[in-house]
Image 1 (cartoon, rainbow, N blue to C red):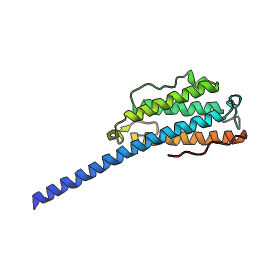
Image 2 (image 1 turned 90 degrees about the vertical axis):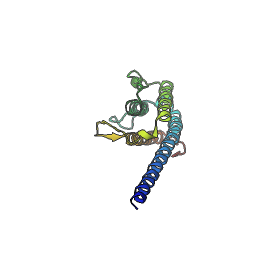
Image 3 (image 1 turned 120 degrees about the vertical axis):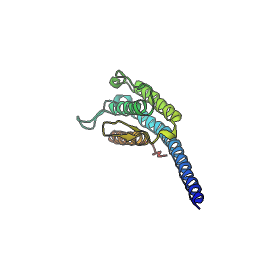
Image 4 (image 1 turned 135 degrees about the horizontal axis):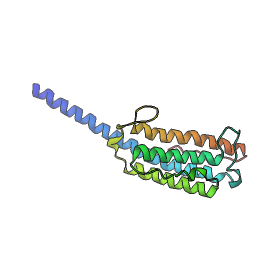
Length: 175
């Protein structure tokens, strides 16, 4: 009877472990699809604003449209390179000073491609790994969620900037 319980426990815990691995893998695949869609949607938003409106600020305290895009990209590069890979941030300090629409679009393309490559090589087994973060220890899964939340936050602001300039934003893509 004792062997039965040992065998039962092994089978039970192996099943839980396999299910967790499948769930982690599904999360990572979904995160990659979501990031691809975020790239496409963010670039559509960025392309809709005329170049002469990239300096637009709804109020003086806010970042300009172009600064919002560069901030979004710099954060995506920082989180991807600092917490999800061992690479270097694809957004440089010089990039943060750009004001030209076409140059900003190139930076966004580059940083999204870098982040997608990073997630594409990321191993699901490391989602639970903890990293030191300014807001306290976080798992890499939480960092991936932060990547999405931060983009959504700033892209939402960009949609308001478009509306304030009489421009209809593109249809939403969430998944």
